[in-house]
Image (tube, rainbow, N blue to C red; front, side, top):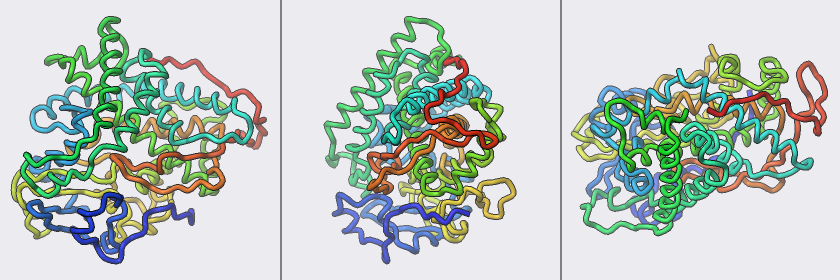
Length: 472
């Protein structure tokens, strides 16, 4: 078992007052929790006209997100207002019939039957990054957060659009989304307090400019796909979807959802995984043993994923400790009772993976980095409905299989050949904007692995083995 306890914000001795929450402009969402919040089953408070109800036990999560999902289908006003300038009526924040129709269109395209095609793109793109890192001078420092964002954006760009987007436009989308995150108003006090909608909201010109940059690129690429005709990409499949094609704005909105969800969350997971491995040598050594045994000197394929059991456990433990979306909020459509407590119509009903994944009643050593808990037959395996990194119920992430496979094969492709160590003097702390990141940068020193299969020595200058990969 790893003895490493990764960083988390100091926990409060008592919950912050309403005034403290409202007056603070710098309080990070991760920092507002008292020690007891990691033991409570439910929590409730009243903010002026708005009730806040937190489900923090398996039965309460099941009630709100599965058994009574229709009552809690609508995303929170904060999430809708934070993301609507970028996503419009896209799947991530839509509800009702719009959400149901889009879900029926998107889910089959991201189904596991397409994973073979997608995996070749994932591995090929990660292998290109491995080549770039191998060409660096010894002990070079790279910003791993930025590198993982570019990697996953390249992958999602190639799968959504085919080869048409290109590295330069991908980089611009990544940069624009990072800026969007920094300036999006996630607190939205007007909605949080239940005030009438005519109350003025704080609007950032930077979010509008960032959204416009992203929209311009997506519109341009989609137009190119229309001219090119049938291409093997997600957008092309959506264009040909039976039951009524999406109009230009709707198609762009769904492309934006897929791009945001497909690159940002996986990039954060991979960045955190690299950091965790750098601090847990025994875990890293066990990972290398598995990669050498399963892959040897070749690149992974989809068929290898079920055999990369420990690699998957590392990814799942990373998602437990640092869930990419650490708060899942819904708006109650009608009054309900959860665990004997009244939930008013219009209440914000929230499942907080940040709390649930570290709950002291459901996890042994909840703050430790222990991938072994996700191995088959582990006595520390998660209790059902206590592990929800991709949400749960009808609104479970449509790209769950895509994202999990992507994280596993990208980590395997890179870790087979390189190691990463935190740069001297670098400080890592979790920061929550729209997603949970290890700060704004993650400087790490990249080195070629020196030991290969069966103890063979691998020269730092040795060329990386490649195989032809079709990029779909």
